[in-house]
Image 1 (tube, chains in turn yellow, brown):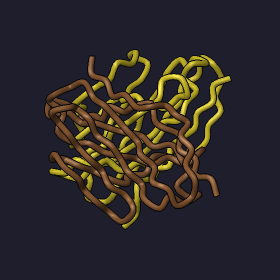
Image 2 (cartoon, helix red, strand yellow; image 1 turned 180 degrees about the horizontal axis):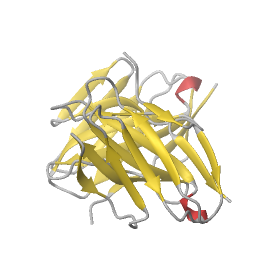
Image 3 (cartoon, chains in turn brown, purple; image 1 turned 180 degrees about the vertical axis):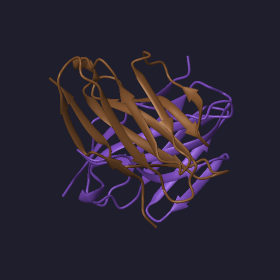
Image 4 (cartoon, one colour; image 1 turned 30 degrees about the vertical axis):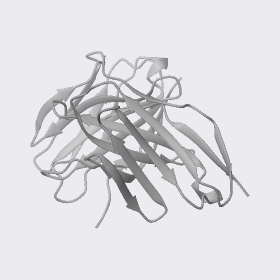
Length: 112
Length: 111
């Protein structure tokens, strides 16, 4: 069974640009959550999607947004990038009725 | 404010010893507890989940939960150098879908 797949693995962007990250969950999983990991703040929850609906959102500015498609694949978008957005962005999928979350390899975003 | 606290370490143990990692949480409504292992430059990997008071064993790993004390721990028996990583404690409350993570404990197992 394939795991969670995130693309791209690495990104370098310039301040002010926008970026879109993609996540394909484990087959059959309908819940996708996004997290940001930085050395200073650790792992912080961004948002969670289930059946194309955002169910929960963390304390991040509106520049961070996401969506989920009918095949459960999810994208997150960050607009007007800031240097502080440099981080490892992680996607996790959870099976229906389950509580365990499985992470993808992450996308390392560097804003210069 | 929901918080998950871990000893930041670093924690060093000799090969073959027992490593003990601790975590406390503030939300009494928390129902699900997880330990993730994260190697440097990699993503977190789920190694243990525990939902009820007591011990849960899986190979060399034992998770312990005490909801009255709001405490969860992870014991690694017969520690190996390959266990050297950062261990993240994560908690999910009944009312929230997201995981709240501790800052992690960096473990080094010395050969």
